[in-house]
Length: 301
Image (spheres, rainbow, N blue to C red):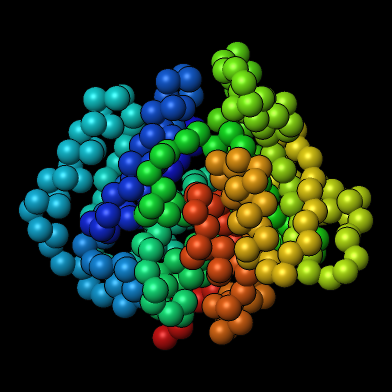
């Protein structure tokens, strides 16, 4: 069984993430696959990091009714779910609630804001969990099944926790061999090209004059086991910006999902806030599956 754990305050970004999670659950249920939603409702504002340590308050009745209405739709669609209203600050209770023994994909929304990166909630949440984190941008409303995946690699060895072993299973659930009607003309030809190539593309963006060896990239991808079972290819691009190059390459491949590793060595300090990983988390226009490299960093006191 796949478990989607959704962290949701009562913002528009969280509502969109919860809708996206329920969309994925409905797609899998329609294919006779087993999936469960675990909704963690947070009665605090998570638009900035202050909300992570704020004491929960009772949400307005209107917002609570909206949440309950969505859960009722899940019940009508025969999607198993549990709903918990957090009674403690997120920073205190989330690590204990996200047991490494429970394989899950952790889903949360991203509010589009101009706040400094150090104040962005997502960049602190990734320190609290060991599970793969699926980020859903607030403006991403044309929900699509993640069938085209772009996986960015920096070609360095990676140490992953056991909790990310769910990633290949999660990705494989959405692959299908059904017949597709692609249409006619140039638009149909473009759709054909995006379907005949493998469903996953491992990419490496470099800023130096010399391109890396493809065998090195492929060996690194295989070592992570994150694309195990999926047909995949590799692509390299030179770009002046690692972050922008990754986003442009993902979009040029018609990706439904961007995937990358958040390096443990950069998570504890200020270095992380200006890193390409942080930039991708804050600016990707499509959902991103962020893989934390190792155990969570302890929340600073």
